Length: 169
Image (cartoon, rainbow, N blue to C red; front, side):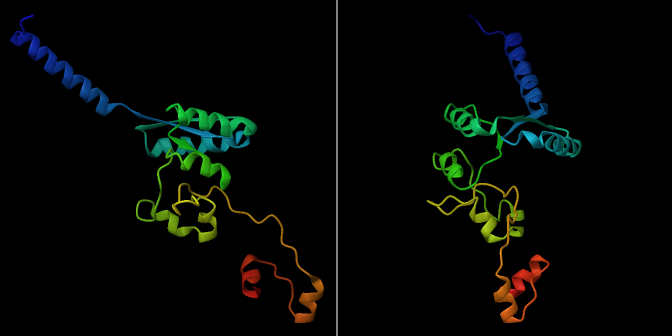
């Protein structure tokens, strides 16, 4: 087949239009979680995010908590995983960070990590390489137990705030 000037120009223009369309295309991200009870909250956050970043579309999908890790691991292994995931800390983090499915984070690329206490980041750190792979989702204290007699013997009142507890410690 003989290439004519018209065919070459058509190919060039077609290539340009395709590349321009690709450059103008909206970025679509998928975000997976097991926290179905938080879907309305996340949809509101995503809506606010997309108002500030209209060129980015986020599709939020939730899965049953008891099946999430299996669904996530299977999808990642098949190369069909989401762009953003809510990771369960500790043991579940290991199963998806070790094979290389996650990008390590550091305080240079994600300066906000400096705002988290080191113990919170420890839960998001891979034990084998010491790198942080996730941002803490929540921090909470379930229960503080103290011995009333020890406090009384030490002449100290039980703390009413976290700062008072830390000062007594």
